[in-house]
Image (cartoon, rainbow, N blue to C red; front, top):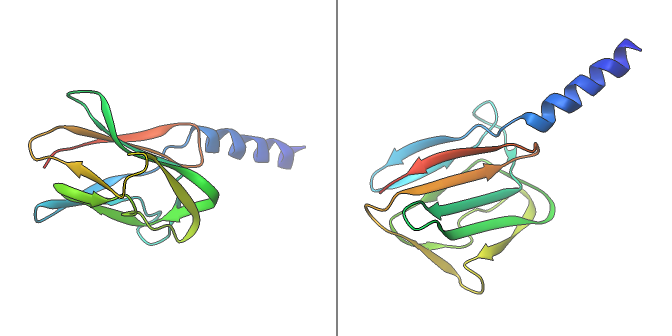
Length: 129
């Protein structure tokens, strides 16, 4: 009985867990870290970058197959490849910009990066170049 209760508790806590996100400045770009314990890939199912001044989604990835796991990725002002995020396992599909190979991040524009992991809650960080 106690083991069943413990398993249920871990399942409930997991549903509300947010992915840990750390932003590191690197010259004119930023590195977005999502590693677990600083060295293990994290399951990331959905990534969105939104221009907060216009509310326009400039980049969005959704799980295509498997369980995509990543460590980190770099974002720079100007053109960025829609394949900037290369999962160790699983794959993503580009939802935005649809049918394009690049998306543009502009200097001075405020962006909100939202990342969903295995749980139902997301993590958000603000990024500006």
